[in-house]
Image (cartoon, rainbow, N blue to C red; front, side):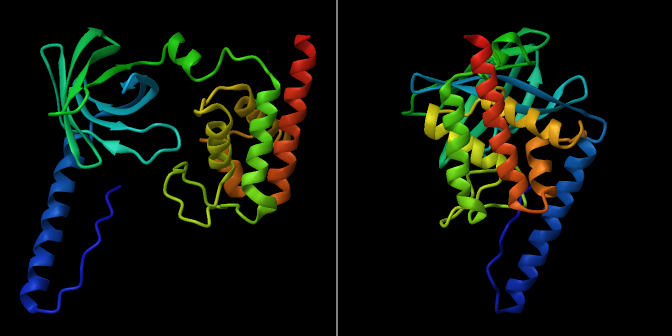
Length: 262
């Protein structure tokens, strides 16, 4: 959601300009809402290759047979809306702003569930981009094939350290972890997200430590259904003891799995 901040105006003319700008923004938002009112939302994945490093891709897409909007939404990172999205003749084009740079992207349809192409910006290294419906490769990228090892326990321990006995606990999680200012506050999800990066250089949504945390929640809540398990359990927890017990139980689950593998 766009949340523009406006500077104070101290003249009538400035106030009128502000009101006109707000009215125009509302009008545009209403038009956009109408444009996608009949569209269906889906979640696509894939890869983003930047500077010879391949990252997991995660994209929220609205489509009514033709793709209307795309939001780049990696786990834990503030989403970015791609601009000027157009799908025609087996091509998908859009612009992608990264910091102050604007990349022009051209992707070609590989089949009905995948696009592949390049995003370019003058004097910058191109970005190789694949967008697709969830695949076996995406499951591997997200850590689904990883075995339980002591590294998973290190991630859970690191999450506990970041939370600092509840002193750094964020009780209102929105699954966006890159907007916290010092002194840092961490939700359960964001603590696991950062701990994964600290221990293993990247977050993997299906790795054993994260799966163990989900299993521990399932045990603690008798299989209660959540929209987003880690977020919703965090936000309904009455005290930090629930978070501590969960992470300690997740460590036990990993320890049990390591023993079974031996």
